[in-house]
Image (tube, rainbow, N blue to C red):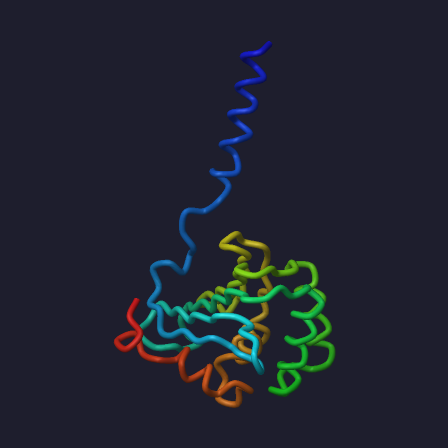
Length: 174
């Protein structure tokens, strides 16, 4: 009986370690650039852009990783995403509502040092990872373009952040 309990305890201790991935799908991509978003006196997040090529393009897989430097509730993240997509004039009202409902079912609240990563595949399907764990997807190419556009579109509300993210791989390294 004691041996059975010990075996179960060992199994339960090992299980979380096996469930944690040792690498992220974007690990072998080229890091193009990185930047920190600051608002007034506060650091909000650090962003890193990865691409399967040496330059960013929507025609090849890419990842955008955000490491949060402050805590935010899911509702705050969704509200700001909606605001930014509206600024970019991206998606109809119905599209935005549908996408935000999907994100509400995927995204968690974030704490300081949590990462939320967007991974876009060659079909422009957007997958999300929280602390390198897959949490869900929005397989709509229009969503992937719009969401990534918050940081990467020419009319992004943060042009300096965009410029730092889009540095070439030769300047930024892997």
